[in-house]
Image (cartoon, rainbow, N blue to C red; front, side, top):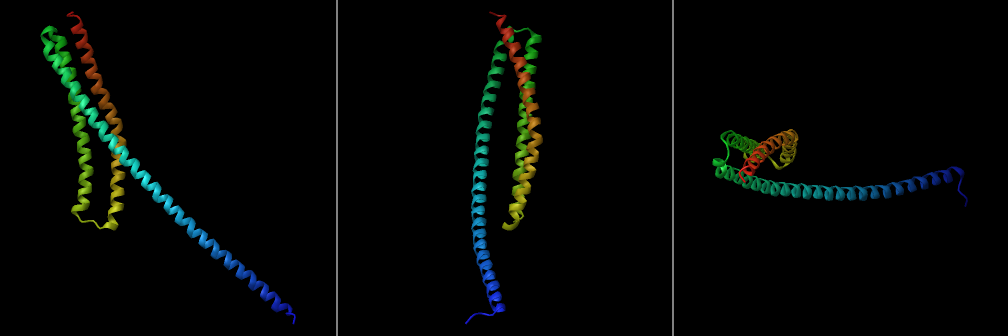
Length: 187
């Protein structure tokens, strides 16, 4: 028995609607899978970022320890040489060499104290979170805000560090060059 025209049209529209529904369900499933893959990628990227930050932090700490050790040995050598040879150097040059070394050392120490204070401020902010018993849900946004503040401090501290480092190295270099010149005159 053939279908009347309206029933055939209705069945055709219904079939098309069912096909659209199946396509939607299939796309929804694919979209969920894509979102899950995107979350996995975001988690992996966050893990890599954390690893990179930890590696950078460890390298910075090791470089800082090495740098401070080299500087301490350098200053010890500088002042030991100056002290031992001061009697062989005229008073003006002896005073200049001592002054340059002291200016260099004072700049280095002041910078290290300033940098330590900056690090301690960051730790104090984190300590405040724990002392105030911040909830787990509130901790991460506050931590991100604290990290942002710390990054801003580092952005303006870096040029200041370059200036302090340049001044410290320059004054020590001037003193060391003058010390070498004065010592070479004694040969």
